[in-house]
Image (cartoon, rainbow, N blue to C red):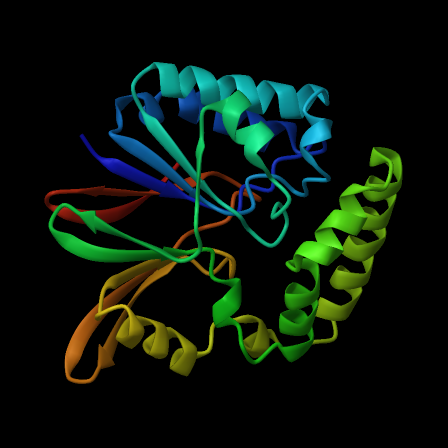
Length: 239
């Protein structure tokens, strides 16, 4: 049975077609998998686990739970848009929250999983913002606000982020090669799978005389995409 990897779905009410593809994926290909890894940004944003009654959020939770009951273990990593997903969401959906990064044995090949945003070290403004919002003090203060206020602030942050990205050179929003190879070296020269950059591809890195494979997962803005891995290797598939 294969193991599947997806990321950067950015599910939201304004993208009904992508939502439909996701639900069909959970009822179809994902049900025949050993496990499904969602490597961040399942949602366009997540304001807190008290938003589980939102119609789309509730439907996503139900679909993940149904997929899990069908025999597929679902693993979920935080992304830069949904890092506030918590234990209440995990319990309701049946998904297991995993650390970033995390290593697994993928059919005999050591494989490292990460969302990918920590590798974009040339974007120093983003890295400073990430450090701030990932702190426990910031999250405690933010989650203490009423849900409506949180959503309003998130919308304002998203608008500011889009404006700032339009002024940044595209290359600084991609991974830094040195950061990638440093991570590979630290974790024993594994295969690396990540998302975040929305630049799907397979890369080879030569690190300390060793060849390391890196897969970049596609986003789901125009269509779905999944990396399918089995004992014969990995291949990208469009949904």
